Image (tube, rainbow, N blue to C red; front, side):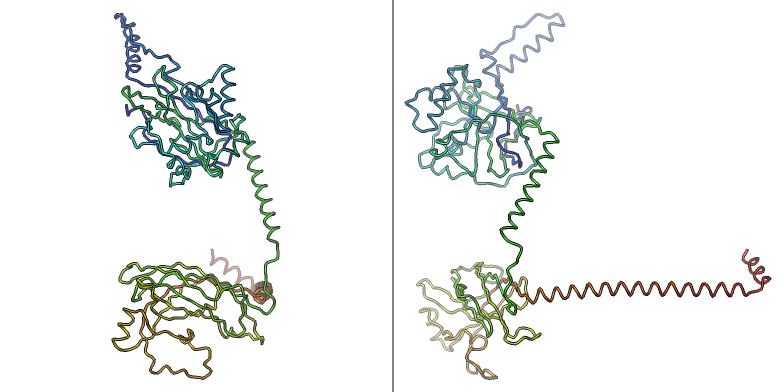
Length: 559
């Protein structure tokens, strides 16, 4: 049986710019039982034996009607096709409790007054039906396409199933279904407001099949999921299984003693777009993008925000990436900014911060603690005296690395500082640290058991203290011990009106230089041509002054 069936029942993802309401799906369902296959084979044998004069053999015929064994339906997006069970359920108005049930009651009543429903076995569950939230819990892992199940989810499982539609990695193909004029089932505004099953993020439609035996239609245990369509409203359409596209049909096997086998074929039958419509749609999207761009530009404006003249704006987006090489685990970093003279910042911008506590992981020979802690710093520099020299001092970042023990007591692991880069761009800097050290075993035992350790009163002592005014700083007798290192990633931006003026002046200089360079080339070419003309005239004068006998003998030698 595997020779005629398609076993690839995985999901497929399509992308389209067209409205999902224009989608049209043709579903063909056909029963392939052992009796039906035997009847077809006997009929073929009878036809072949009649030509040879053999006796006739009466084939076995199936007791079911043709409509029970085969059905083909064209379904639109969110088009509601009622099953036999729903037709019987919604006939009774007393069983309708929600606005959606009452709307279904009106539609079922209208169908009964008319010729009845056109479908027999194939029906649909739209995104507003209760089955959409619960069908994932009712699936079973089998080798067939899908089998029916009698298990029902609990109330808690149904509520948890509402958080569905998590996207997974799937194969992606280009797909476009064109526009067509169809009438789709659309719930009323009352249903949209009151139905808690409406999901505006991801919409789903299920095409089902009632695979029960003839005369036993309308039983929930005979329902089987045939096809699923999902869309997120952004042009992504997920179908399961994929459209056949000329391939072999899928196989559906029912449960029970009969084990009926069905063949399923799913095709996209949306009407194709004309070339004129495609060009018109392309032009429409292009105009829409242009208008959206103009609207965004009008909101932003043409004037770029610029600091006042004589002021440098320094913006840094930094990240404390990691720390490694420290003695204890559960470490965090405390940092503070220092602004030199002529630097200022806004009061709302913080100058200090503390990272979260991170546990170390073994990476090679080192124990590394990853923070990935972002921070932002913005400052302004205004020079008192205009000078062409570089900026005298840049802001500093002092940091302190600490660790926590099981009793939430702090230990100092190291001190360090970072001089902010003086050039814009991306910078990755690794700063090494040290910590004060007290000699003797008592301090080491105190650090291990109690958690106390020497600390610096002034963090700027790591580099040069702010209160120091001398020429030389002596740290004689101050004992330290090298500890780990901290890695920073900095993205720096510098903005100043002087940069714009200098760039404009530089462009003007290049423009003048290019024109001057072009004029010099022109003058050189003209002088070369004049020298060539003078040399040519001299050669003609010399040739005319030579005797004619000499010229004739020279021409004979060349021949």
